Image (cartoon, rainbow, N blue to C red):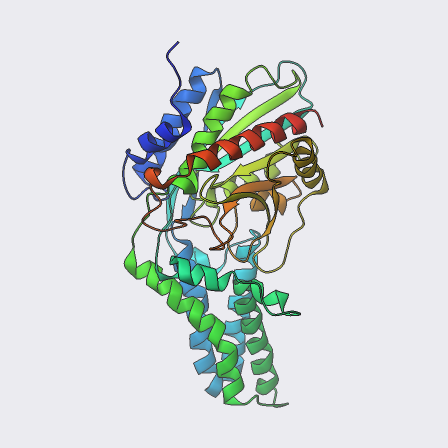
Length: 401
């Protein structure tokens, strides 16, 4: 049997399949198919799950907060209309960020993408299903992803102002506040001063402008660390876990589509599994692998508007894995300031779900995050190996839970 390619060799080969690896493109599917061939050679059953989702998260952010800025101007003359528009934006983005529904985003055309599920069934009656999920698509880039701006945005907020760390939470809250002020003005109780309305619009205006820049640039990064590293790690783990899991454990590896579009593939999969009860929170654990290099390995506390606690069973397993390997740097919690991973749609539907990711503490994100330099040659191979080793130990521990 020929030697398997190394993780970095696989990343290089996948990156070479094509540029603009956006959701719904042939390149996205080519990466999934290439990985699928490796899983199939290991005896996994392949299950393709098509879905539809709009392509650009940044266009959605641009629309939401652009409407909010427009509503402030309208609200000066027609406060009831301004209140209605601001309330719509706040509700729509809250639902979208919590992966509970899409309102304004439905104005964009949907594209066809797919999730690839590689399934290794349990040998006996299934007790536990372990799901690994990593996304195949790559991200747009723009000014907001320059390391200096990321560093500024991820600095710890002043004491007592921890809520400022959630930038989109702040923007959404100020939009909701504007809706309340305009509703009060519409019924004649009190009219907030213009300067206050403008001040409350600043977070929405900044969000609109930064995302408008991403949309206008229309440039896609290679996405080697984010997230060909997670995809390649899935194949490595499939090899390493062969014959090591209990006979009553099913292993499912999901190579998702449209994650960079707003966890579209994971959302559609979580919705489908929730309807069909094919997977249930009682028998399924979700582990996301998203950017396993170019920083220090962390586990993610999700939540763009407010924090969503890591399920205790997963946090306990991560901490126990740390304790069992004291020579290794412990994997600690990362409270995300913005964005989400493929774990979120499952987490909000009651599944035990968490993601592992790498963060460079000097930047506040992984090195080369959503930047044109995120190429295979800039992947930290030593950290990638360390991350895969930790994921392997964690999965073995979870398989016996």
